[in-house]
Image (cartoon, rainbow, N blue to C red; front, side):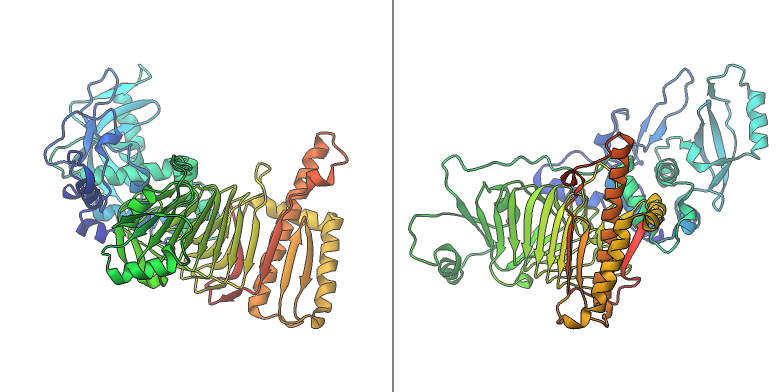
Length: 596
């Protein structure tokens, strides 16, 4: 598992040697080279030494306090994507929750020096310098002895050398690795040791939960638990684009940007005929030419159009689109390929009010962010191909996304993530060969609005997990069981569903399932196919969740003394249209729920 890390120098000194800041393209190339390893960013730590240490790629810091401890490796300021890549590629991979300790031990055995290094044993009460004589990888513990000379700083004055010896004896001189801070060594020999222990420490302090092993063990632990906790609960890493919209160009003109690596007379004539001037021009249109799509996007103002000619374009930065523009390929998607290389932000980051993207293939490599994020506004994606690396498309709260006639594949997470309060319309798409097809985030919290979801004629196939997954809290299952026994609305819903199913023979081949404000109209054939059953199952679960959310809100209002709630106040106006989707060869079935 960690072989690639060692072979590629991922935690080694050569892969992480700090370099002076470089401008322009040189900085991009250097960044790509450095990010092949899990490096420590020299600018991310304000407490680090002013000078680089020969032989070591990491920086050091001097602990505060009265005791003069030696310098220690500074590893606590690793960036999000450095930790992300370490856990995903080198430590946890696709392990289950019950396998975490085993995978971690295997990783440490390949990168950790088993002896010959010093560390500060750090607790809430004291800090003491120790020497490591051996490592018990299975137990994730180090065998230590007190360093000579004896250095200790304690909040308790009575904590003497004899007390420390007695404590270590009780612990059989075996200490948890995450409680050790590695003493700096400028040879570079212990860089990997320091970084590996940092990842273990960070994991057990911030990510691991005592109940993780009690949950269902069939899920990929990294995707289900590590990534969201790392991103949201530890860092608050729900990235919001800070790119500001430019608005309308000062002179009021709209510009058409043409992207082509080379421009020939034949291509120019075709563009004039098909795109630039298809009819006699009533007014002059300004045209700007660019050799790469990123520069064209950055030059856009509100209302501009970017036309990308056939070719394979490699970019190293993100497309941050804050204005309402159109980005279109001139030809078939397979002929207009935009490939993003290097880590960093999302490939395409949308905040504009009305963005349209069409006829382009986006290819993502070596990424830690998704291929497309819609933070707000509306984004329409038509006739495109998305070759993903991590997650696919993320539709944030209050954003609107329309995808049609497109193909999405390769996501290591979900192909499409739908957040509460968003609107997502998927029509005639292929979503396949992802970890999950579509993931609907928990919307049961009282602060969340129910998403509006429409899925029509999509083919969701060959995904490792489910075609569609609904995330909801564990407590919801208990509430739902009670509600099914006590709530007349649910009883009526069951009767309605059953009655309509009996009359399914009078319906033609088109299946329509629509739900508005907890009311559902169902038309289905008497003998439902596997694909149609998937449509029904998804709607039924979303309806039940929506109904339960309404009941929970009623209960809260009742507790506040509001006994007769306004129907308009109670209405969440959830609309679900799930029609004609085909679910094929998904590893765990068409639909599932994930409880957290």
